[in-house]
Amino acid sequence: MAPETLQFFVTGTDTGVGKTQVSCALLSLLKDAGYGPQGFKPYESGCASLKAPSDALAMREAAGSTLPVDAVCPHRFKAPLAPGIAAARLGREPDFGVTLSAWKKLKGGTVVVEGAGGLFVPVDSKRDVVDLIQAFRLPVVLVARAGLGTLNHVALSLEALASRKVPVRAVVLSRGVPGRDLAERDNRRYLEARHGVEVLGPVPYVEDPRKRRLAFRRALAPLVPERARAR
Image 1 (tube, rainbow, N blue to C red):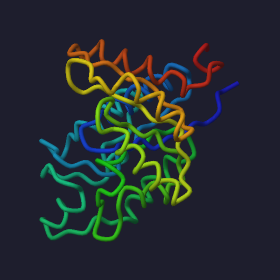
Image 2 (image 1 turned 180 degrees about the vertical axis):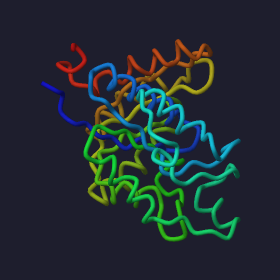
Image 3 (image 1 turned 30 degrees about the horizontal axis):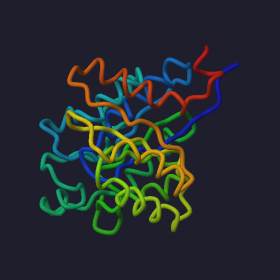
């Protein structure tokens, strides 16, 4: 019997917190468990090549997918700015209908969607990432820094999601620099106790890309049901 469908929206408390690493690790776990997942990065900026958006292609590879680039990343920009700002600089307005059309083709199966930056990063002149989450009706995996300052960032993000009745599947704490922050030891326990949310990690900082991927896979394994992971 094929495993049930699982869907997640990966967002962050900030940019550069490890969203794509979380997305790729989750996709690879789902692939190994037999889910046949797809990755979807509807907006990507900072693209060295518009034909090869690095985050979206990394997600596609992790999923073992052969979908064309336009299917996994319909909106791409070279400027390393919020997608809505990058588009405005070009005098363009990203067509939200294109986003919804691409999502419609994927939403029937197991999928991991990744946003851009945090919840209130604009994706066009009217919408932010959080509006995208609401439109897709997906549970969130919130990625945050592991150390000092993350309590406030996570709390604000959780409050914003709760105000829109968006379910949060888990918070993932990721260490982005060498060395352990003094606050790190207490952050996971505090967040779980205070907000009643599952907290995964902290994922350690590892320079070797292969070992870092493995570290993220270990941290995210609880999101893939035991029965499916054992297949």
